[in-house]
Image (cartoon, rainbow, N blue to C red; front, side, top):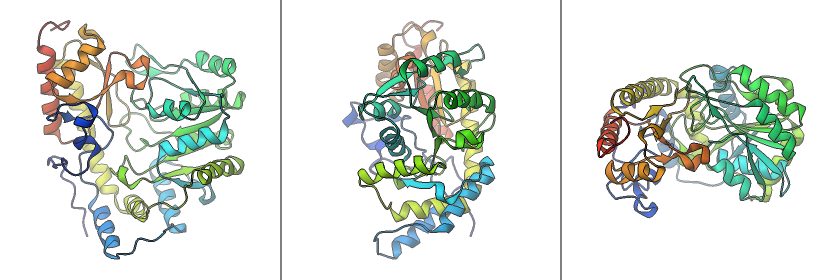
Amino acid sequence: MVERNLDFDSVIERRNTRSLKYDFGAERGMPEDILPMWVADMDFRTSSYIEDALIERAKEGVFGYSEAKTPYFEIVRDWMVRRHNWSPKEEWLVKTPGVVTALAMAVKAYTEPGDAVLIQLPVYYPFAEVIEDNGRRVVSSDLYRGGDNRYHTDFEDFEQKITDNKVKLLLLCNPHNPVGRVWTREELIRLGDICVKHDVIVASDEIHEDFVFAGKHQVFAGLKEEYEDRCIVCTSPSKTFNLATMVLSNIFIPNSDLRKRFRKQLDAAGISQLGVMGLIACETAYSKGEEWYLTMLEYVRGNIAFVKKYVAQNLPGVTMTEHEGTYLVWLDFSGTGLSDAEIEDRIVHKAKLWLDGGTMFGESGKGFQRINVACPRSVLEEAMERLKEALDRNDCAGS
């Protein structure tokens, strides 16, 4: 067998496929003919090995309760060793229906109602939701954008927020969505040492770990034993292999007490065995999908370079934040002189594009838009041309 799905230029018709990205615009107040570049799934066929494995399993025709044995763990571990130089143990593994589920379970397991949970805005919006919806209090040490056009942690503010609010849990986004940072070893150690000093547990969302275009992904638990003992590491093949609907994530919790408390919350929520298709997809992805993954990664790298060049040459008043990781690009529209409402109106009603407005990720996202570039180049070119035409109209600053 050979990998068949290495053509990332072909446009796949996703409308009328029950796609959240393509089929629910009207329900969310968008024009029917909008081009969606928002939610984080890719417009690419996954590895043909995964397709074939799922078809073969479907032919069995019996879909009773299923579970994975040791070979499943070994396949996941080998991917982590090979790609990220980290070797977890089998007893650390807890499977959940997704990383957001795991973050919610961490909030419930390691904090009490009314406790403060720390995040770093602007950040993936479910971080705040799983805190607030579980009756905890959101505290943010906002990231700041430096002169290098990258986001950074204000470590003095970070520590102050912990002490002032008696923070017990940090939800860390690594690599960071939406600002595209791949945190360095030095940054994570400085952050981790502060958490150890103040007895803060870290739930590290590393779902975008396989999309690194500058620097190197550092598994938080692999940096120091002290971190390993007080963190959970949240991973999944869903972003890497476009498997979101398989609803499966691999959560590693080295500390037995933290693991026991986490499992208790899963039990309380009625979560036990996951779907067999997700298990098979994960095994096949990590054991046979590497050629597809590496080819896709280079294609996305090219898309990111295309957007960077296009923005610089054709969109006065718009800047692209220096991009290190994820396939989600963070664009700053503040130089156009338009308000957030005006930016949104031009993008949605003139460009007919569906992006993610920056304030979705917190007030510090004001003036920004997040765009998903994991799509055929022709689609991305059309999106950029639409954006250029929409911003050319009337009198944007610099145009």
